[in-house]
Length: 213
Image (cartoon, rainbow, N blue to C red):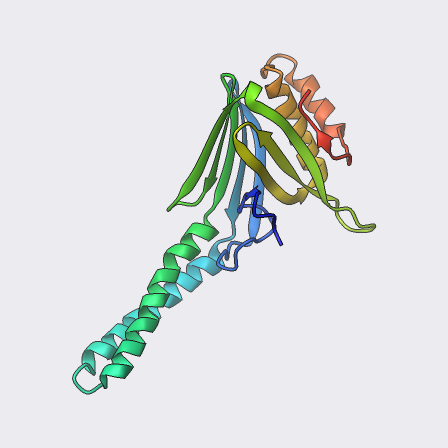
C-alpha cells in the first residue's frame, strides 16, 4: 500500500488507478536548447477510446428508452435508470483523466519544474535548484532473471517526497539520472554532446542513493 506521505506519478508502467486504460508508458529525455526535458506519457489508449464510445452508445440508447417510456415507467425504476446513467457519465472524465496522463520534468534557468496530470487537472511544482535536496534512483524489481526496474524520487524543500517513472527500465533511468546531475550542476548541452552521449550509453548503476553531487 503506498505511503500516504508520498506524491506519486500516475503515467508510469505501474497502473495506480483502475480507471487507467492506456496500456503503455513512454519515457523520453532530451535537451531542448539549454533546457533538460524528461517527458513520460501514456500511449495505447485504444481500449479507453473503445470504452468511451461504447459508454456513449449505451447512454444514448438508455436515454432514448427512458424518454420513449417515460409515462409508462414507475418512478422508482426511472430513478434507478437515471442513477445508472449519471454514474456512467461521471466515469467518462475519470477515464479520460487517468488514460491521458503525462509527467513533465524540466530543468532550465536554475529551476526544476514538475507537471503531472491529465487533460482535466494537473499538479505543478517548482523549485530553485538549491532547494532540491536529492534526486534518487530506487530499485523496484531486482529479482534474478527478471528485468531490472526502478523509479526516481525527488526530495525538495517544502514538498513531500515525489516518486516518478515507476517500473521503467533501471538502465534507462540511470542514463536520465546522469543528465539530471548534469543539469543540477548547471552544465548545458554543447559541443561535447557526442562524448556525453557515448558516456551515458554505458553508464549503469544498481545502487540506490543520492544522485545530486
